[in-house]
Image 1: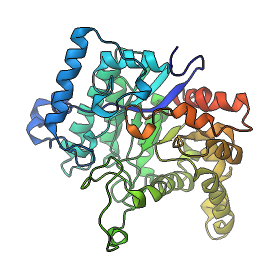
Image 2: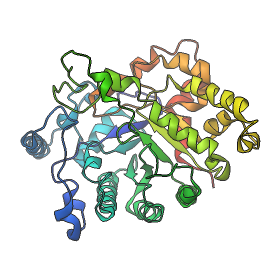
Image 3: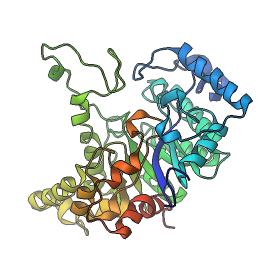
Length: 385
């Protein structure tokens, strides 16, 4: 019996744990010396030695023919089955029982995605997408999530086309302005058109998002707490960061709605992943309220043929955190908006994400559950022609 049992369940959020040379091995030779090393400051470990030891242990498991067992309750991070080895990931997925699984990277974006040298930035993007496509190539259930930078729209589109050729089925974009421009600026239209033409969704994900952190709020005279990974000096989430995670995706989606992107590109689809979902019902109400308040002074708002919330309902899906009351969220906002995710092999996904979601599903119909586990994912990924 698999973890997902007899339910058709698609996983909208999983990860690989990069090895030390993961980007370097896939970088074009001319750029290899310019590429910064893997930065582990957001990890619970700052040790390359630890990662290399786990690589050797995985080789030993493979040599012994060991098969993953009860992986959802097992070790996480680099120690998890299939964290970085594609063959072992296939076996881990057999045990989990998910029918499809989006696969994101974890730390590699810190090497290149904000690099000032555009050749390094887009060279890193290509190396990343090459590596992701290679990792997922051996199993049709795995869907590689590539990365993009909106800084140069033309190069962004070039890398999107190349990423699709390499096997990427979705693309993670930073949830922040495109340089000094809104993501809804007309200069970005070639990017949104490419998403539609290639029939792949965009992804916003916790990580490279707009800067909502105000350091003065942390200057409270108290010792600095450990981050979510347990690291004393780590750069990962702490409670004050967690509280404002939803600000960046709200800003980004607001731009796409009110700048007319979803109106100009009705086939565009996207996912907001590992950024929570409890904020979504009120966000939809606030979008519509904002239009009613400001349309008298803004003719673009008055001319919108649909309610702002209707564009989000048509185009975007969201993954709740396992600790959220997802049943309440679905009853409030509707069942068509939300997706199951495991976050495997990250520990934040917990050792029983299905169980945690199910315990909140009071007064939720089987049809609504089917949408959460299966149908909404399929609608997001299979962008209509």
